[in-house]
Length: 407
Image (cartoon, rainbow, N blue to C red; front, side, top):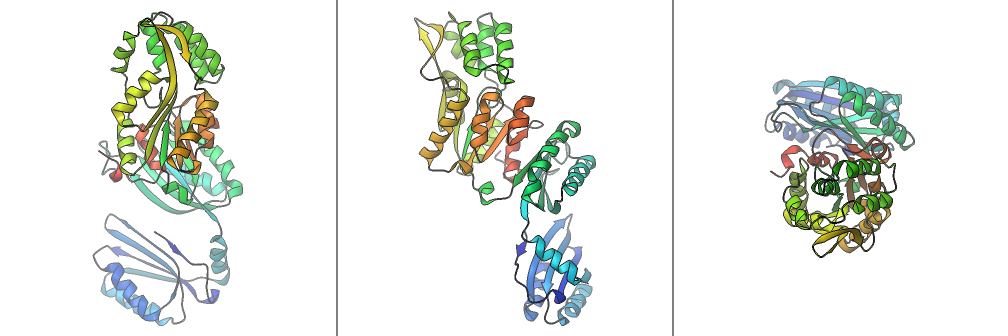
């Protein structure tokens, strides 16, 4: 954690003090007790502990330099390394000027984080004028069965004018590095989301329901081909839905119950929803699929809201049409706004997750819009994209350490 103050008395008296050594109870208390006697002005403080080794840094404005001698004596007694450094006027003024920089969070997610991946994101950040202030492990050997790091979080300082360019270039790295790289502005909303909205097909479940219905009716390949075109954004959603539904005319409604019982949940879906509900989140499904299946998942997972298309059934058979307004891309965005208003949360507090081109309108208006295992067009257009791990890796984008994931 870093504590900041931009007020100072003189840049001529600014010192950077680093203390490192074996961590033990009372180390920080003993250092700060000594500091309290001299009352220095604290400009910056940072601490980290790695494998029982403590790294403690302070940026101080000193009126009494006797503090340095006292701290050095104390560190010698405690077998701690002590490194004081007086900043030049230019260095101090540079530090002070950086305090007006914006902060950003870069999240690196991978089945196994490598030195190559860390090097790539670090160098690209540097080329765009961003400095790395802090790196934290969110998913590591303590939690992974394979013993690998799965997520690192970088805190960057830099200018908003270079944010989009860095974000675009980082996204180009994802395929090359076999990693997801998300870049977000660090705001209060990042830890204050309150509603998550999911697309259903190929997002909350690992299937397209309309393709399963088509297989049951013997028209699977024809419908699947149109589904694929629609998800890539090559066909208008309403037009493609009409074409596919027409091929389902005559399907017995008993097939719906059989398919619903076999829906494969997306990896990490249950863990994500349980964790977010324990945090007080509200949840919703907004799908271009069908209400029968959305409601089935709503009951199974404890989802608060569910909206989808209502299949028309007459005399126990599908007619090949839907009832009411079609839930297309624009309708998804409208429903997201309605749910947010009903729950009393701002759009900035909403997470939206989807994989298809018809999800882009709701992803674009949510505070955090995530394309999950999406088609290339959607990955390019969505604010954020995740493909390498399960749905629960969304928790990393919220800053959650894996120890906080609900089991």
